[in-house]
Image (cartoon, rainbow, N blue to C red; front, side, top):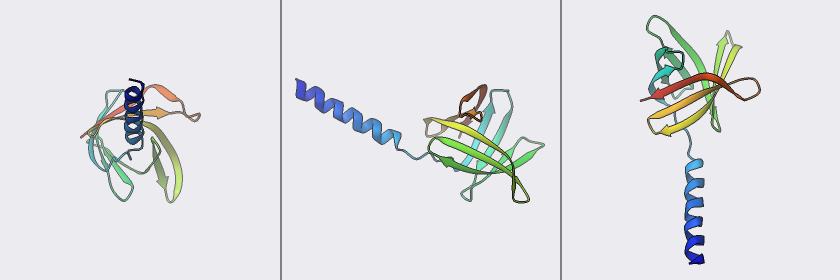
Length: 117
């Protein structure tokens, strides 16, 4: 009985490690809904350019993912104007939640964006 529990425990641990090492892929078009009620369309390009379409307004940012964090970089003439950092929580292949992080790396309360394909 102890061997069976040990064996099942090892399988579970391997499964959790395999799932946690999965690379987060945001490439493509997503519907974005912010906690502030604003809806938009986000298009993550392979060339690390993100285009946000709010209907009458469009914005472009450079983007990169490191570990479970998405960094959006707003540049003007090669200089960084502002950076936005989000913690990525992948709910499924087609559903992701972004939690805005402050300068200390803590979640900003109520500042979330739901992305879905």
